[in-house]
Length: 211
Image (tube, rainbow, N blue to C red):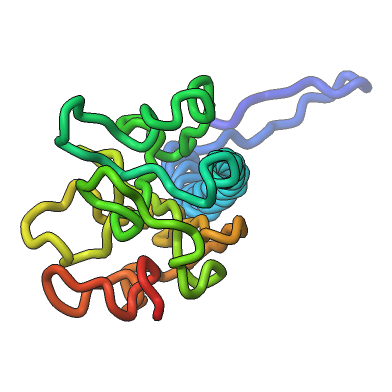
């Protein structure tokens, strides 16, 4: 039934109420608009996280450069089982302790970054920076996901071991910190052959090793 309203002149006029169907239509329109806008808002939020991640990786890379300069151009080993077992961040504890490097899009893995396993894997003597053929084309740190380890490698390098493989968590892309200190964003990491090992055990042609 239409609502009756009194005008300032004292006359009564009838106002129309929304019907249930009209209210449902309005709610449906709002829901459709929200569904259209939400992915865009989420992508914008992730772009902000990507920028924060870039800064974190640059700081981590800078700490590594200082370590290398202080140790006669030598990188720390990624890990070694030689007693006592240790990792790159324990060998360089004075450089990385207190380091707040943590990808804002990955909070379940320590840092969320994997140190290049090609630089030195499981030996006590690490590579020297002079042995790196193309520092501006070879990565130092990659983004890795759960369960995570201390180092990183290309997809398919270690067969069924997925712990150090890349994670494209920034709108299907990921950040890479290179040995020369710059950080690049790769928007389609899964489709980029440089993230995939050509065969198990081979780094050739990947961002981990570019001869």
